[in-house]
Amino acid sequence: MAKIYPSLLSANFGKIYEEVAAIEKAGADGLHFDVMDGHFVPNLSFGAPVLKWLKGQTKLELDCHLMVTEPRVLYADFAKAGAHRITIHVEACKNLEDELKAIRDLGMKAGLSVRPQTPFLDCEKYLKYIDLFLSMTVNPGFGGQALIPEALTKTTDMIAWLKKLGLREQIQVQVDGGINTDTAPKANAIGVDILVAGNAVFNGTDYKKNIDLLRR
Ligand code: DX5
Ligand code: ZN
Image 1 (cartoon, helix red, strand yellow):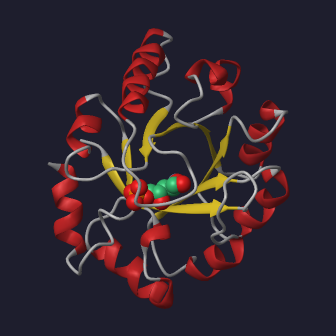
Image 2 (cartoon, rainbow, N blue to C red):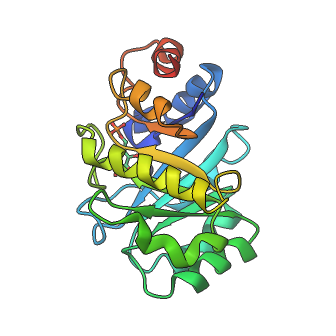
């Protein structure tokens, strides 16, 4: 059964500590922290200064998804702020091998993400430098969008490919975008390890019920 990582992007930013405490109490497996620069994606969110204030407030794994161009300037601040993993986009930077090594050198896990239209084979050269593959199931930039079915088909092929390469045990597979009670069972059925969910978790007041429904 996949782990559930709520995306902070859909939380009420006016009471961010309470929101994080609430999802931890509700049984979340980690916290997904969506960082946007207004350039790689047409939206802005938050960065390491916000993460820093969450450090020590929660035991959840801090899973940072950097939707930014030139992410390298941010790694040291994120490491200091307590990030456990940084995921960058294959489309965002040129020297990915160096980027991924730089993340690991700072003691964090490294992830690589693809937009829905990007072939997973674009990640082939970098598999030995990553701990996680993030398959975007919406176009990155905004919460609350509908899952793109072709992206899930691509994720199925990607999982089969990792198995064939003998890498399935060492690289976790995560999907992000449009995960709800309709789509979560489909992602679970193809063997995804981590489901990121924003709106489906931070909806109403019963986060435990929302998370439990995604596990079914
Ligand atoms: C999109 C972000 C996602 C998104 C998930 O760019 O990476 O994490 O906020 O939100 P939902 O689950 O509402 O699609
Ligand atoms: Zn994300």
